[in-house]
Picture 1 (cartoon, rainbow, N blue to C red):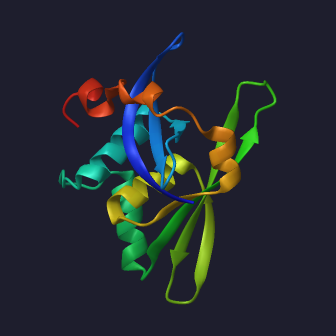
Picture 2: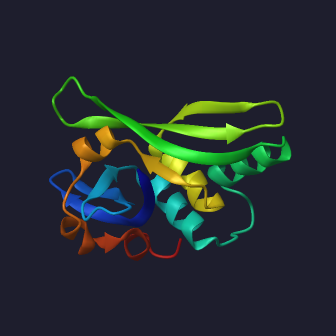
Picture 3: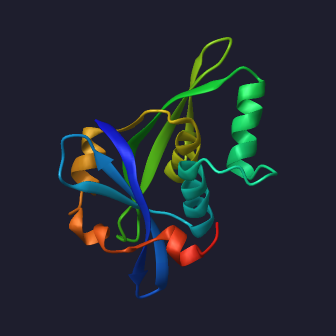
Amino acid sequence: MKASIDAVRVAGTPQGPVPVLVLGVEGEDDVVPIFIGFEEATSIARGLEAEDIGRPLTHDLLLDVMEELGGRIDRVVVSSIEERDDGQGGTYIADLHVETPRNSVVIDARPSDSLALAARTNAPIEVTESVFENGRDDREKFAELEDIREVAGDL
């Protein structure tokens, strides 16, 4: 299923504020929220803004190295959710599809890292049907949350 990054927001939880990446899925009203870390959230927001801040951050560096070696990101697929043993939800799994001069490779990666790279390259994003069905939530629950850029200040 084709997806896109709708927003990077901050949700209030009993443990404090937590960034949430909101994936919109083409043709669906519901979204797939993925809770991530603050560093990854600000990196994704920077990638979406395509702002050059001078020296490369980790995701910029990885992308620069990949491109210097002749590779390019073909797509990102959020492929599964692994249930946690403690019953506290699940861990999202992503596959980073990369074209290299020799062949195509699929790299197991965290969704936050994969999506930070996709934000920088406009690479297509996909979610599997099972991820959508198991992770879907009401778009309105996330629409009113603060944008990470408002919370983090000047990125």
